[in-house]
Image (tube, rainbow over all chains, first blue to last red; front, side, top):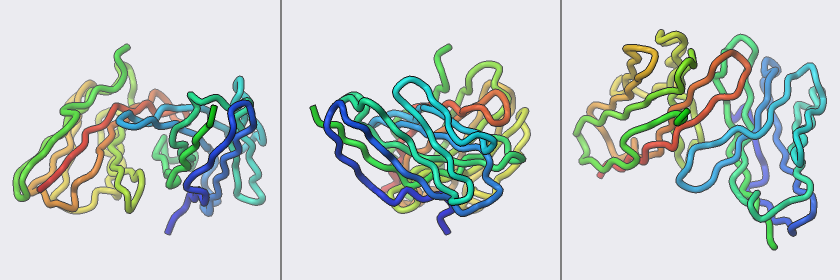
Length: 113
Length: 113
């Protein structure tokens, strides 16, 4: 059973436009959510996170939105840049589980110049 | 800081052989994680250490897998005997506190032939 799902395996966006990556979860115990970016042959790198007590967190071009009632979160990248092309993973963890992350399957973002 | 350091970067071994993957976490981090990435199962947590003590090993697939953390600066993941289905990229990650981001190493690509 996939507790964290990213239903879009890939997304293609024009440079300068908005990229929206989506993530759904089923475990109601999850209360901390993270997005990681991964380039080929490298480990995932942390991008942005959000606690369940918030519904939005912003860091520069990146904003994460959390809808707890829908068990849904999204990552917005505005404006998108070619260097943002990578695989993006959504991850979640319950408060009492340290940083034991459950990852989604990833979405490959391609930003075209 | 050099980040999380994993060795080797690539390992090719024959079925039945013992494989040892190594990890040096970021200095001062008190949590260490081993993850495995495969096409079929994505990124999955294998084991989690806190203050050098294994806290959760429910993700370890079989008794052929074992992990140790003899001190705060070193951990190993051993597979004995190895099988072709163990072929994957193995990531080590470390973090400082609960609900802060985990930092990943570059991974070890294991191929068992």
